[in-house]
Length: 232
Image: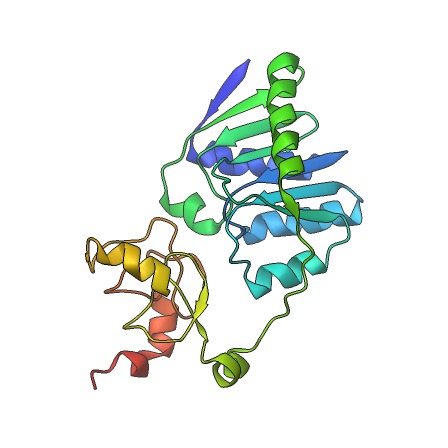
């Protein structure tokens, strides 16, 4: 039997899937920005030698995420360029849902999902897992080698230090120009300065945030960097 899940139930069920895994965990999510609560559970699984396969679809892997993945022995990372699906599974239960894995989705978005238990519907469970493994086979295995670069060093070496509020790509720190070139071209077709990016990030810290051109940074970063917003 397929179970319907609302936003709160999805958040809880994903945690159960990771925590109760005995053989493996599959995480299929375009955006590789994992909620801290889930990171702790994945770290526990790593100690228990549970294999975790992460398939993501956005190439802008942030240094913080790559450093974290590098610290784990049983986590494998795969990049699928056209990925849009979200699916989370262990050997007994899986979820197909609209929810990404970062905190903004959990707190701010209205999400829906369906859960399938292998004991209740083995045929459907196996059909979905076959497709998950197909996507993984067609993806590129990623060898993570990115290191964390302090903001001061980034500014000295490549003039960067900020993040594109749409894709998260590292760009020059300038709150008046918080988009990378490609995303600015897309945004400029409408030129709505109040448009809030659906999966946006803070221009300064790179964390998930309801960013727009008018308000490109989170509240904490604004409080700490008010001098950047003074009119010249």
